[in-house]
Amino acid sequence: MFRPPPKLLPSEWSEKNVRIPIGNAVPGLIRFDNAPYQREPLDMTINPECQRITLMWSAQVGKTMLALCAQAYRIAQDPTSQIMMQPSQGDLSTWLETKFNPLIDTNKELQELVAKPRAREGVNNQRMKSYPGGFLMFSWSGSPKTMRGRSAPFIVADEVDGYDKTTEGHPVSLLWQRAATFGDRRKLLEISTPTIKDASWIESAYEQGDQRRFHVCCPDCNHEQPLIWSQVVWDEGEPDSARYVCNECGSAWNDGQRIAAIRNGRWIAEKPFRGHASYHLNEMYSVFRKLGDIVQSFLEKKHAGDLQTFVNVSLAETWEERGEGVESHILQDRCEEWEKIPEPVVILVAGIDVQDDRLEVEILGVGRDDETWSVGYHILRGDPSSPRVWEHLDSILFAEYETEDGRSLTIRGSGIDTGGHHTQTTYKYVKAREGRRVFALKGVGGEGRPLVTRPTKNNIGKVRLFAVGSDTAKELVYSRLRIDEIGPGYCHFPVGRDDEYFKQLTAERLVTRYVRGHAKRVWIKSRNRNEALDVRCYALAAYSILGVNVNTIAARIAEKRITQVPVEEQNEPAAPVTQQIRRPPPRRGGFIQGWR
Image 1 (tube, rainbow, N blue to C red):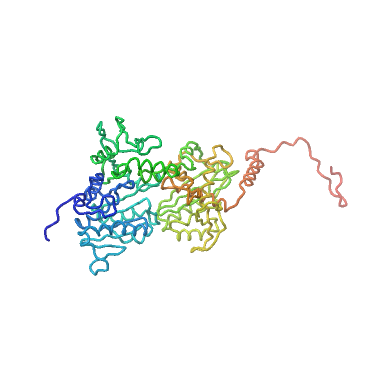
Image 2: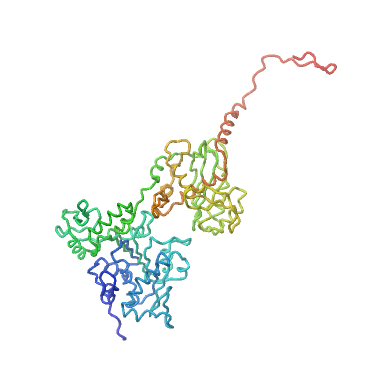
């Protein structure tokens, strides 16, 4: 009993100890010959030079079993405290009942180590399981309190693309940051099938790593290559005829040749390794799936108009929506140059977005027929819970701005978002400035909502709070961005504006989704950051609340410009007298005589 356990890699220990429960495809002791691509990522979890392992894997390739083996290794072989995170509490319960508990029940060694339910020694419940040398804590993304005050050197985050971002940040980042006290001992294993392009956490994590793909050798020419969907061919109407074509010699592989090639494959990285190993794997690497079955799944999803599911779940690739949107480069190409606010601008409005570490402000000039000019965009860095950043905002909102024709303009109205970060602080700021037309806004999703509703004071801050129809505001912004002729509704942008601004402004697309057979149009992000779009919506909401008629104001300015006497004419000398003026005679009897 005093003899130390043998030094085994996680893959070696798993093949000796981990039993796959009955009901799976191949029950009994796990054999990595059926999934050789699992060995390296599993062993990487104890590599002292690796701190982060990212698996952007499809379904049916054993990513959950890999995580279970890594967790079991740290219970029996290398006792270490751990945290397991799932997208929701329901997902966590399902994982416990269908994955973790059956694994413990079929492995006698693990049964002896994990504390018994309701036992005095140790803990075993829905929040934590303890064992000699450590514990396994559970959390889910929708509950920030399950992440507070918790840290462990080994973290497994499952299906990370299903996590809800909280007001404190992304759940994976929060757990990873809290493990910083363990230094180079900390390890993160994050797993997921991807979702939407540029909005997928796992895709971003994969690209940050060394981007490894599993290469296999062609049985005819020995050329190493990763398996990609474009090389799968089949006869029309016959999915069972599917075969894989080598991209070097063109030979067609049957399922037996493909499986044999997989069992002799290896991982090859595309970028240098710097402590972050990232792996991509699609369903074609599963030795339990025939190519014909994968083709049949593809045809069914294509017929049902649900190719996104196939791309995400089977190919482990992000889906790029082709919905209604605007291309950022088109807006950049039409930028204009101006030094002062252009002459056609009649009034100024502003939109403000509150983030956890900054404020973002856009000053929007509005002219005749709602033609707009983005005359300024400011990112005010600083903690919004401190007064400094709000003082900086005051200096922008209540300043005077000069136009090209010499007029002095102030910002007529400002709309500030109160539905996200630092709500209480934002309420206090608005409360003290409502008389200066600073409006509290809160976005509300859903089709058909008005751009701005009547205000209500049913809030903690007792401010006049306007509900903004987010979908309606975005449709208005995008409809105007698509106008390509200068005139009514056209949007002007200055030369020198950052590329990131245009990417954020065009970060969403309107797509059609089918929910229970009914078509529903929803806005989806094509990238994580969209603050420029939000502040534009808030600025237009403020303009709508003001209710001013810019055409009337523009007409008055034009009339004043025409009737105003130029300064140089006012300084000209009077015209010379060319004839004598006859003065009236003195009054007599109250009448004036001799006056002509």
